[in-house]
Length: 188
Image (cartoon, rainbow, N blue to C red; front, side, top):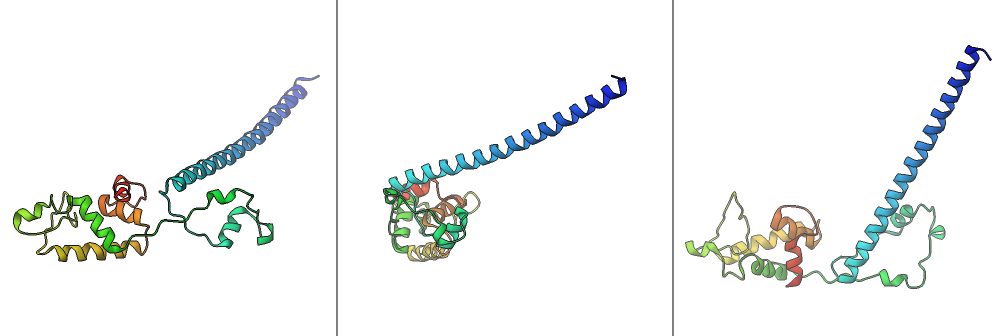
């Protein structure tokens, strides 16, 4: 066999190895992402089940169309049927407390029911932690004034957020549903 033929054969073999390597690499990459997504979904399901069992998670209904599209089926008839025992995963969400109840609990959390309201040293009120931070420390003429501001703040936030998220925003300024403040609120 001539040197040129041998070089061509080696190039063909290298090209085949490169092509097969790319195919195998792409396949493994696809499998990796599929496995990662599957593991993430399973982990989220286990965490959701734990939170439901502990009563920490609100369950909201998702429109059937959204659920079916998520499952990758085209019609309701193609959707999987819940097996016996699947009702164990269904939970009712606890009733949301009224704005008045929320504000009362915030007052307890922020100042132990007014006992630690530093504004009272000035003959003023807050006790709700409203507009109080490292950068500002607002006090109000009456307890009713600050209470109505806090109530209005929660009405606005609850229109677009869960109670837990609104509580975390109120306390930390961060939109999350899992903060220590929300947990303390739930334990009251």
